[in-house]
Image 1 (cartoon, one colour):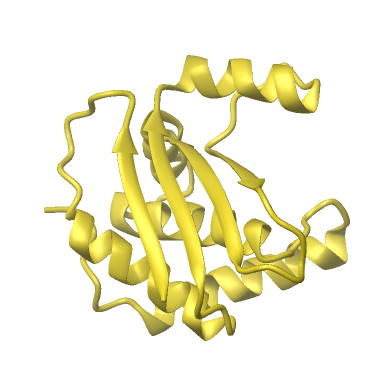
Image 2: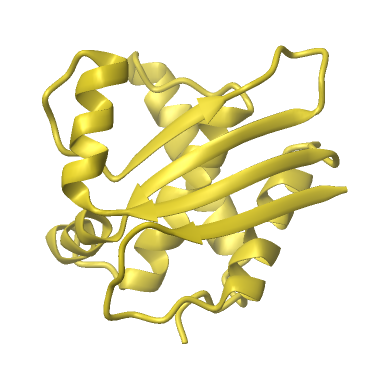
Length: 146
C-alpha cells in the first residue's frame, strides 16, 4: 500500500486538497509499478529549499523540488519530497500554465526521482518530461487545489 504524508513548514495563500494530492501521488506511483511506499511531501519556503540545495547538492540555486530516497532498490520505496510553492507559482507564470498543472508536474517530477528517473542528461530529461506529461494527462480529473 502506498502511504503519502503531507506536511507544511510554510503557509501559502492557496488551499491544497490533501486527499486529492495523496490520490494523485498514489496513482503516479501505481502507474509506475510502485504499490508499496512511504512518501512524505513537505511544503516549505523557497529560502529553506535553497539552503537544502546548498547543503546537500553543493549548489546555490532556487529549486521547486528536492527528492530524498531513503532506501535501496530491493526495499519498498521510502522518501521525502521538499517543495517550494513560491517557486512552483513562479514556474506556472513563467511557463504559462495553471498552478494546478504545475503542482502536478513538480510532484510527479519528485516522485519520478524517487523511483529512479534521472534528468542530468538531455535524453534522460526528455524521458522524464514525457512521463510527467503522461501523469498529468492520465490523472487530469484529480483537482489538487481547492
